[in-house]
Image (cartoon, rainbow, N blue to C red; front, side, top):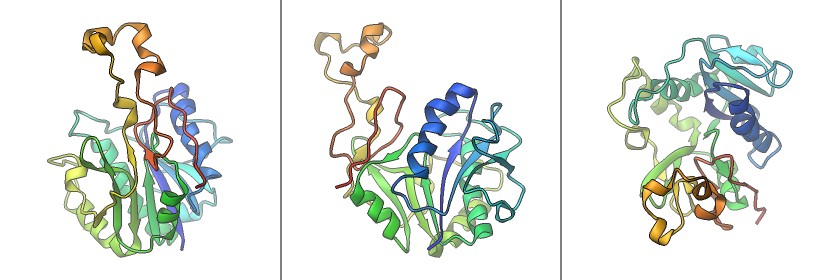
Length: 245
């Protein structure tokens, strides 16, 4: 089964590349997800890494004519994000994945955002072994589907294209978690947006203390649990490690 692994991307500078996208690429290009191509679909970033690090291909080109195992597919115009529920740049990049998959003859699309990490063998085995359906994870604390990790098999490519074609202006009425026509929400895997969860700070729990440098230290934030299958919205201070068990 030929698999496309992709994330969406926006790089404002070299630091954004090194601390987020380079970190993601280093993790997955030799990691447990079996992928024939690894692609970052970019929303008109002002910064691009050197070509010798990763090549960049214009979004309008046929990726099948390029032999790079991993690359950036870049839209020239930045659409960006206007609000929490209005993010046309992400939508355009995400929906372009099926065009790339068709061009490459892929049987499966694996979408893992550039701040999301699969951490356990049981989850990566599920991703690698899945042959049908459109699967997302479950964000436990928020009680919402987690669309930062998705498996979209070939039998769902038509559904993805129909969804894309009904929104040509990239104007969506709600967030992706409530709109995408996925077929399965997989609650058996443990994971969440752990970077957002603070420890109990007792009398210092008020938000007014957040600006103090001491409360930015790792101790005051919940760590990624040792038995987590995945973590999303991972930030620089968080360490991630694959658990081969």
